Length: 498
Image 1: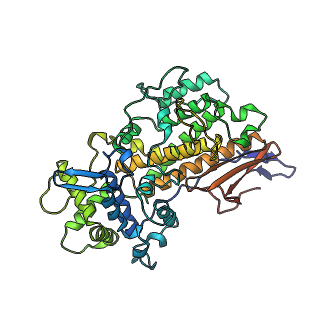
Image 2 (image 1 turned 45 degrees about the vertical axis):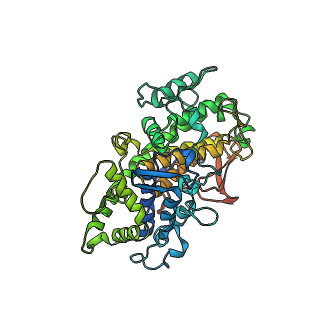
Image 3 (image 1 turned 90 degrees about the vertical axis):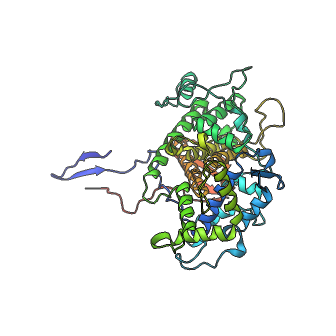
């Protein structure tokens, strides 16, 4: 708000504009553009969605066995190794097959198109530059662990049959009872009392079951349940927060308040991105166009050049994958005469009623996973025995990463989102969490620090130094000062005096 001050000179007014020295930083994000994919990456992305559709009824415990067989019908079957070989034959997953970068219109490699393409591709490969079963199901998160499994935090998710309804969150210093009521009302999460078992649904044995669980629950429910369980088990905070003398800065209510703000801002950002003119076509639309292109005898015209190159890549380098998809579609009842049916196989009743109902799940997951990693001690040696009394405990950082990857996996298995969109949405949520932490802790004006590993596997350190009545926060990635992620800059100068 501008303040008008009278001066001694007639007709001259001074407007005191801009931020005061004691005003905490606001939260102004520059929403990321839609991923720009070349034909090679688009072919690989669509092939991954085909592969996820083919194995969505396979138990997770069998996905590490390359000799495991998947049967589509009485005469069509393949092994996971054969499926992996089909994916590896694509240019995007094969360094030797990638063309030399050239003009955007002629190159199959999207490295010349989008700066994030190399990072997205690197996360799909192992340390030797190869696509493996583990890296395939790992998604776009560089979480740790050699096994293909879901996050242990799913065990903390308490099912609630009550209908959820949105309402304003309590103040950060409100009693814990009000926060518990709000959490249960808005997300369906609830606090597990001593001796009270978790009322969980069916076991998450297959990708299909994972999709059903996440689509049927509020995006924040599993995160609020995990946070309440961590708080109930007195999980240690980040060492830089444990040293703070003022307890209100990192109280349970303060954590829940930050989670509520992150969720609200994540939902708002996700909805705004849906209105962008550069948003991608849906995978099902792309698959339908690929089906139509491969069924045509004539050459593509107009703007179909990139899509035609994608279709040629799939048909020429992964013909068996397309054959298996065609057979699955026919086995599901989509019998068509003539050319192959390469539509994305439907999940039928497990598919949500409308994709907009779940558009914010990955952004929310990215924000809340980052918040859990930042506030709690997520160092690699820090482990907490949280679920039951068996085992040696869990690594909060690794499990939060896995949970975000599980949300992204469910979106891919449902066929509604490309992996490149999962990559963007998780990192948008990560940026939102960083800015919420910055704004909250700068307002406290106390010296503190915290650290966590981001979704790219890099070490992030956030430190706040007192400066007057507030504080000044800095961000370091791998020990080097870094700009705040996705912070909206200003091209022009600020008006100071009129």
